[in-house]
Structure formats: C-alpha cells, structure tokens
Amino acid sequence: MTIGEKITKLRKEQNLTQEQFAEILNVSRQSVSKWELNITYPDTDKLIRISKLFNRSLDFLLKDEIERMDINVVSANEEGKYNKIYALILTYLSFPPLFGWLVGIFSLKFQKKHMDNKIQIGLTILGISFSAILTILMIVGVALGL
Image (cartoon, rainbow, N blue to C red; front, side, top):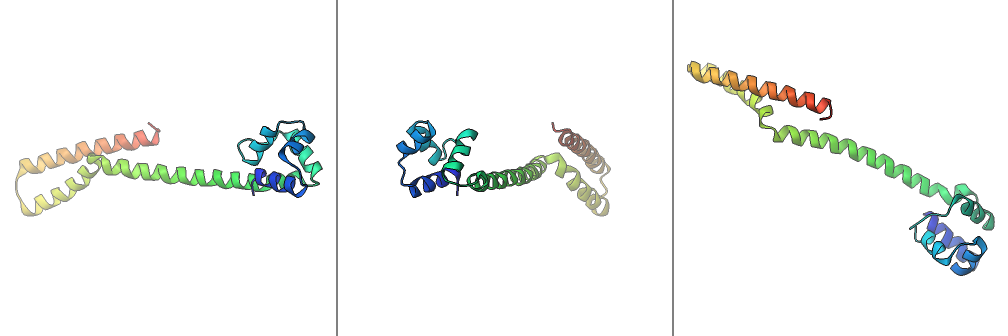
C-alpha cells in the first residue's frame, strides 16, 4: 500500500472529508488530494502529525513505500547491467572487423589446406591483422568507456 492509499484509508476510517483533514493539518484540500493520489508526499512535519492523529507509527506510513523504492532501485540496477551487456553484444555483432579476424582464421586454414595462392593467403593475413587491430582498439574504447 502506498502512503497515499494509507492516508485515504485512515482518513475514511475516521469519517473525515479531505476538507476536514486539511483543516486539521493546516493545508489545502488540494494538498490532501495530491497526497492521496501519490502525486506529492506530505512534508516530514505533516507525516508526524498524521501519525499522531491516527495513532500510527511513521514506520507504518512509510515502510511499504520505502521497500517499493528499494525494489525499484535494485530492478533499475539489474536492468542497467543487462542493458550494458546487451549493448556490448550488439556492438560486437554490428562491428564487422571483430568477425573479420575470426572468419579470416578459418579462411586461412581452408586456403592453406585446399589452395596454393600465396597472394590470396597474404591478403587474408593482412585482413586478419587489420581486423585484430580494430578489435583491440574497440576493446580499449569499451574499457575506457568511450
């Protein structure tokens, strides 16, 4: 239950209108409405007065809301971690030189086994080297957060 839902429930249990409740706390009816709709939260001094008025602890008023915020922070952190990994994988897959050296190695093995074209083998080695250099540069860029 949110703070707003608890305030609404406690106010109604005491048969108070928003207007009457607002007068007791010296705030506007609109403030009470915003609290109950979870648009804004009461100031600390108002929370203390509410807890005394309804004979409830501040812990009761705030606890679920704080736990919900903690869960949201944990979820956001986990989501951020997965998003970073996902972005890294997509970057890897979208950057052809990374595959270039892998494909080049297989190509070189195939060429040495089945062909005897020294120019083609030399170009493959040059392509593997270029792809490896670009791969190293990308890894350094990711490590430095660029």
